[in-house]
Length: 438
Image (cartoon, rainbow, N blue to C red; front, side, top):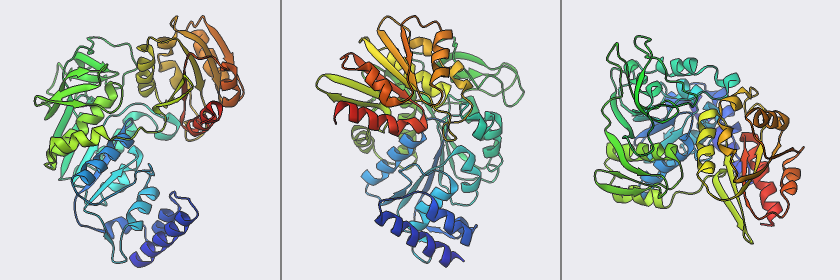
């Protein structure tokens, strides 16, 4: 059945490509012919899997760039098809009919809930985990259940774990992987670290004894330096520890070497630390790492800027409290006068449970610099109510569509931030470009 599985996937992927489409349908067909096809593939080099709540797409793509710039042929699901069917499409479309994947290195972004289908069935050389936060409760369930689904496939994993050592929810994975070689990355204490936090935090209790964890400092959310007063569980010694963090200049140091982060925010520094950890494991030089950072593309909706005739619009994706809070911090630190449009949808891909907006500090937007906020989307009125309960005293309006929201802003030349949930992101991009005439 391997032959039919690969042939069907390759043929359907080719036909879809011819009409300008992609997606996971070819992989769905391939898996129907052979549900065990992953176990029947052969790889010429390392297979690297990346997962986590926030940052896995950027991290996986930069890891793929890392190997490409090191002279390797890379196969990767760069478009973000990170479920089992999408991964099947990526692998089978790039395999020959004998099941050999035609690449020196394979880099796969994998949805957290799909790790259980991938890790036991592929010869994974390195498993990179960025972070775990509460996200889309109706789909992913409580975070504890999600983490347990990954822990169950770790006891026999005997290759390399590359883990965020500042996230207790990630560090606990090492307890379930006694055969693995573990490499930890993270950030040292810096001028942005805080001794207390009022952000929604998930890493509150020790996974070994259940005692409440204590923190020496927080970087953001539950990410920081932690320890349990009753047992041995604590922040491990970091193999890759970034220091001298400068969020204004987007720079950091590692081993007395200075690097420039291609993106904004503390969370992006962790993505960079993961890239350096992979480079260290696979003996790739810092010069290649710098090239990757210098040429990293701007992901759609991640602080994406549109500028025309003096008007600047910045588009950001939000999908859970922690990621949204980091976006709020970036906006809060911008001294410019601003207008804000928030597009809140509750479709299946967004997560139909929108209670997370009450764990997000939208209060960070509520300064004298914010001249007006317009809300829209399928739950635009709920977003307006959240801002009202948060104490926003400025001009607050609700519109039916993103087009109407942008028209409400009109020709005002103050900087505009558009904040959108997942299904609203591409419609927001389209509307912004149309409004600006780009």
